[in-house]
Length: 285
Ligand code: BDR
Ligand code: CA
Image 1 (cartoon, helix red, strand yellow):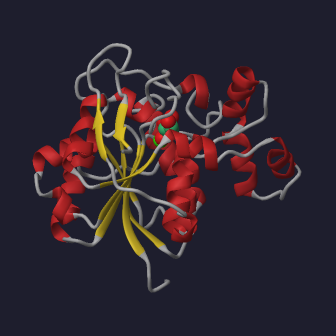
Image 2 (cartoon, protein in one colour):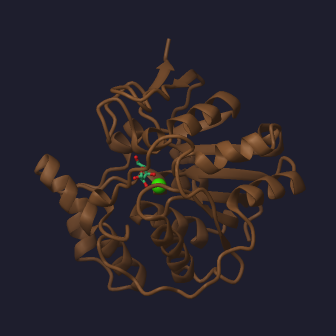
């Protein structure tokens, strides 16, 4: 194991891009996944749980990494999936066989709080889902910010268009009350939708190379789980493209030099219902 190994808990609503993030983290010797927690988001909850287990199984780490089931719905708002993007089941439209791997014996929120208390200053929380579990953990342990090393979040849209509405990105839009709590109370490293679109997109040329690429289990898994998002993006833009919101976060954890620029800003999330639900107000001035 590398000496600069970072210990992480990954909070995920496992669909295709989350599965890539888990695979990247699980196969890197710079990241040690302590546990995986599941939050209501992309697709039906039970699919998310199985998808996470499937990805961890592919990476061969299910003996050491347990999946803990968390919030099955947002704090306040009605729940909307994004299976129109990720396909039925969340992994590109193909339904994979159940792994038969049991879930952890505790609720995800209890797990996060317990691990943070037992390892003060040691753990990084990697949040690639709506922030329901994290907000609930904060309510249970108000000192979570001090107990964790860092909190990395994929979510929000910093002064750019969102992906689910013009005003908002999916993770913040699904549970804006939770996003507001987390952004208000935790010191967060935010990877937003703007960064996703600008810097993590694979276009036609890259995708063609991947299509003609290696005949391995992982390469084949990538092609399968991105099929639906490719189709969706083509119908929306007329172009071949795949974005990598969640795996970009783990890529930066694996290789911190990928981060060329970062700034510190005051951020607020709009939790009201209506046109600006989930909007991230970032004062870049
Ligand atoms: C985010 O929303 C989800 O659909 C993806 O998994 C990602 O976490 C992108 O807006
Ligand atoms: Ca996600």
